Image 1 (cartoon, rainbow, N blue to C red):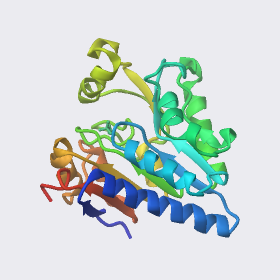
Image 2: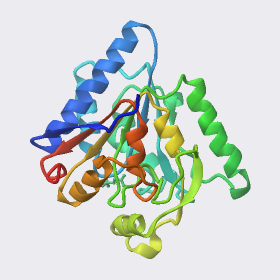
Image 3: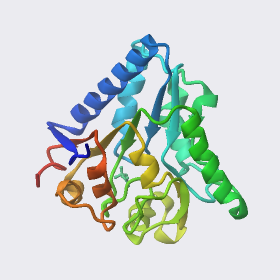
Length: 250
Ligand code: PGA
């Protein structure tokens, strides 16, 4: 049965990240014991950086990612892999280059697909998730406007991976990294809300005062397209991992 997401407020972002890394490491180990791969859905942004640092640390202590398959939530359209702001670069520098994941098991939406091929590309991304057995555990952040992935306010819960337009709040939040709002890509490929809700378990990280208001809205009972994170209220196993500041209004 769907239920409003659980939440845990940790003393710090590091403590929350460590708790989620521990959960992921237990999942990987238990599935490995069953000789099954673990399929992770992964997020980018400032929020998961400490989670990835902790997973790298656990790898250095012996956790292997050779049986892990990953699917990233999203990527800017038109930003090549070589671009330092690409999510491809982000994932490789924070995680993939530092663990023993098999490169063929890494999936990040391809940002340079020609526009006439976008639809078939997005549907093939979905097919790959299905062929991998579906996502065991999805990691999410949350935008100040309540987006999850690039599912911006107004997003439908019925849509799977697709190309979308970035919302103005999202563009403003990315402006510094790109050297000004005019430099921020306007479009992205993102897993849809439907894809995200298809994960067996969903975890959402949110840290800092700037996220307190939107976290409160996301957990306030009532689903609205204006706050896409409220769609998580229709999922049966979602947990928010918060620091004190992000949980201050709960
Ligand atoms: P942030 O982004 O981690 O950089 O705050 C979160 C998001 O937009 O999902």
